[in-house]
Amino acid sequence: MDKVDVLIVGAGVIGLAIAAKLSQQLDDVLVIDKNASFGEETSSRNSEVIHAGIYYPQNSLKATFCVQGKTLLYQYCQERHIPVNKIGKLLVAQGPVEEAYLKKTMLSASKNGVDDLTWIAQAQLKQLEPELRATAAIHSPSTGIIDSHAYMQSLLAQAEQNNAMFVAQTKMITALATPDGFDVSLDSQGERLSIHCKYLINCAGLHSVSLAHTIKGLDKKFIPQLHWCRGHYFSYQGKSPFKQLIYPIPRDNGLGIHASLDMGGQLKFGPDTQYIEHLDYDFPEKLKDKFITQVSQYFPTLAIDKLQPAYAGIRPKLQGPNDAFKDFVIQTSQVHQLKGLINLFGIDSPGLTSSLAIADYVAERLKVV
Image (tube, rainbow, N blue to C red; front, side, top):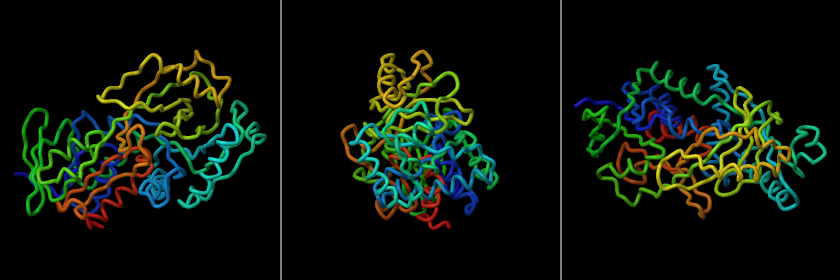
């Protein structure tokens, strides 16, 4: 039986960040993914936004990792020449009720260590963004955008420089806990393989819960329920009317249908929030009306014919449609008593921003650094 130090299941941005980190200290790091390449699911179907850490409850993992990860990510991109733009963001309010929410948000953000937010009154907003309709806004200068594919490519290259291996089209079938790690059965393009690893890290994203159920010896009470939440994006043809990101007040267990730009300056709107039972990337025809209604609230001159379906992404959420805030869950042996196993559940937004901070956290928990 082949042996490795670490087996990481899932080559999204989290799995790749952990591989890049652990491969600095360990000789044999293997990353597998059931898809034909890395980052084909949640990591490549999102807004590509570097978040500031504004919304999350104080001392939550999301708040801590987002603020830490933002700093680490900008530094990483600068060092490795990853396309990134600290473009800034306006979180906008429509009327007194939403303005009160903004004021509370500024206080909670400050408790998270986000101390660079400024209040923008309506008159100043008109000067900054003439096409924007809002009564007030918070400006977040540390919010940015990133080329997420280039970032993942860089993480993989860093891991491979440290002798880590990435094998695509490979699934984990089962894992059996042993005194010194795990005996793992794999299916690699139809061929059954067996491998032993000292550390097993479940970064399977949308499939993290189903993967956890294949780990023999893991008590089922430690496996949460995961919800698949699809979000759709529309692109907007022509020159963007906005110079920065525009976010409405969060709603429906998401950050609202916001306006974001990619590194090429293409404007897009999304995502919405649609809980689904089966994994598919359908784009219902009726969605355009919903987008028009919500986007028009802050962009009243929206040209309907310029709004075109772009893509959909699916997020692995721990909170259901009517649930309150749920934090990231990163389970170690202190919780489930299986030495060397780390399960990562519900790594939705701000997972991309948090990726390097999560990698540091995992490495610390494995006592590798």
